[in-house]
Length: 493
Ligand code: ADP
Image (cartoon, rainbow, N blue to C red; front, top):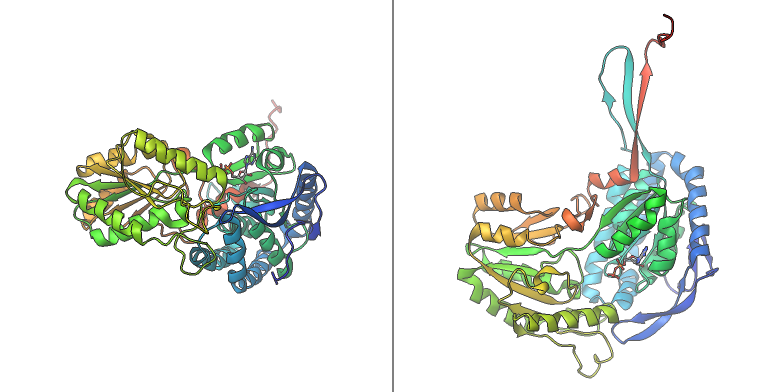
């Protein structure tokens, strides 16, 4: 189905169309620094016609389609998606440089997200509200309308699954704008929606630049809600752009997750998780535990384990099966990571291993960085405060629970956190005190369709996944019906 798919068309109203006012340009393969092929980028006129199509589909077949019929379409799509995991993984890896073994694993799970949300499509019930015999009061849940989904470059298909699953289950229609660096997999997604037989306009995919196409989607009066994953600074711009139309927003923003290892933990398991969560996706995920907090009695042991593990990470061409870690997804991110590594050195952190771009033959033109470990990191250092989004772990020593919690909560972020301990009481105490939307105990980055995910503090608004995800794609309507039909004349006397 994806064989021979061209990426130089936009998917609007069920048709593959040339951009009206955007253009076609090369998309860069971060493993080579060269364009791998041409992709269509939409402009504001393309966003206009996509929104128009989504609005017509919403008012037409979609909002009134019975939930079980929406569910059947979503299930068909999910089954087709499952059959396309390999091509999807290859397309996404070529665009964002994620090691193919990771892309396969991650994309292989997405089908369950779509199936799970499909199963909720016909269960969007409200409730009755007991008052007295004079009225019957009840709520119904109605789709929010046309949703603009704006997704990032690190996990384009995952971010799409987390948004399109609940949006379509709720009866919304969608204009998906993927990140300019990684547009291809979202166009492949459009092809699967087309094959599944979704009515034209229910899902539209328009790659485009953030400040033009993205901002136009946000400002558009025909869009009821924006579902965004990306940087906090972009979210603030989006809020301002969307203010005039007072649309709904959900934001999944950055993180600087604390990964806390207490001295009583199973240290080997904790190190497995903490090293993996430092270098998965080349460090480019907001959920990763880039701040590793280690209790002082085991600090040196953990530092040594990180050094040893870093030497085992096979950095290489992302499409090769044995590669553990690919390049950074684009040049600006490479530069950002290298500048933070320089900053860590200036701040006085102890560079244990890594710390440089990889210049060896075959990798020199790509955006590859060594797995990097800083020890003796202190909580106020910028490498411990800012989201770096590179393969850079900072190991912070601490003494006792109170200090661990203070360090863990000592950033503006509050997305995810991990803690390792064999003490069940401590697991409950500490997880309760941590300011994060998701806390993992004796595991890390365990995320599923049914587990609500999202940020406290500067890490976002709303939750994705879980039943809670539907909330931001639905409006609650309260209806009150009098059982008597009597309404007194207020002016009789
Ligand atoms: P990053 O800085 O990591 O690239 P961004 O938050 O800039 O992350 O990008 C996430 C998504 O937001 C991308 O799809 C991008 O095109 C989009 N975007 C960027 N700027 C804007 C904007 N002003 N309005 C709407 N979308 C934007």
